[in-house]
Image (tube, rainbow, N blue to C red; front, top):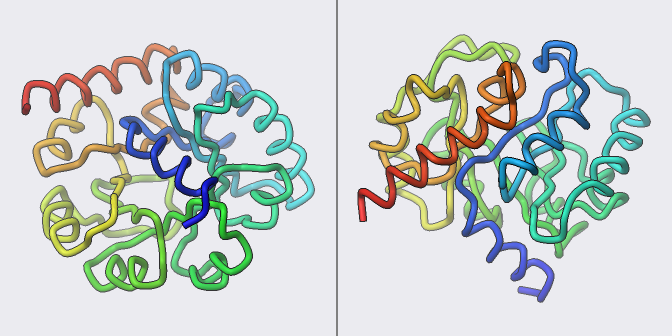
Length: 221
């Protein structure tokens, strides 16, 4: 493993809250505004997920966001490995219908690669293919994932994570009202969209979610 990827993996170990952007889920606020709030809240990672932009628009936005991002914060691009490479992002997150992980790794040996998984088989496949982490979800009902009519429930966290050796994140309908359920099921890195982007005060929302995650694991020893 090369030096750049190793450094990024060490930063990933420090992640607690993993905010994911979405202009259509930000109640009229810009993605730049949301990222600024995320950074001020002390988050160590975020994912630029903008499903309604053209590739050109996404690239222009990613360049702006990369310029805002400190060296000790991981910026991930959703889907677009070419944009991630072009703007110098730290990683890319790939879904089941995106570029295969093996191909992504060949193109981008320095990047961290995350992969969506909905069951044990998909998580194991991603791990074998070389993913740096898998995301387990959707845990709860969510409107940010088009076509997701079913959700896994917190039980899936323990079921899937106990079968893999790489880090994992959890996502899907997680909010302050139910975050304790995913933490109790073993989650340490919690990805959210609207719990931050649609909040009245995104910075405060992110700070409160981070405090909940950190407080839970400190109490848990």
